[in-house]
Image (cartoon, rainbow, N blue to C red):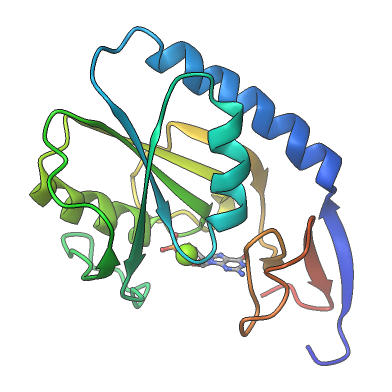
Length: 179
Ligand code: 5GP
Ligand code: MG
């Protein structure tokens, strides 16, 4: 990995174009809702994606953030995650859109969704920038996804490897690493 070369998978322009389309999709789905819409950004990885997505949505959205305790990626499907930090209290009467950088096995997002129910949202939708469909194990259906990828460990645009690469404007992968 130390000698691995960083390759581009999705350029800044490709990300921007797709996120504008996603914003349009979400706008259409929520424009007739009378209740508030809240985006909950799952930190840290979803931060750049959330910032771009919320500005591509043409209905007013509230913004909250969530830091979930790292989920072991085990095969337990009934588990909940602990929220290490969350900026919201009660979500009664609000439509929630959970925003994450990538869905892989799906267990993290599934568990977050389950814990989210404790806050009584009116509805919960799932939105990811990337989806590693080849690695999916959970039955969770994502409502909005930017790009499908398969069997690549990606970095950039919020995604890290050992806290590095989050600041890249594009999504890349480290060649020689097919993990
Ligand atoms: P899941 O529970 O869906 O398997 O894992 C989701 C989380 O694992 C993501 O929110 C992300 O933090 C991390 N993750 C999964 N795949 C990748 C990847 O290819 N690159 C990076 N940097 N993180 C990933
Ligand atoms: Mg994450």
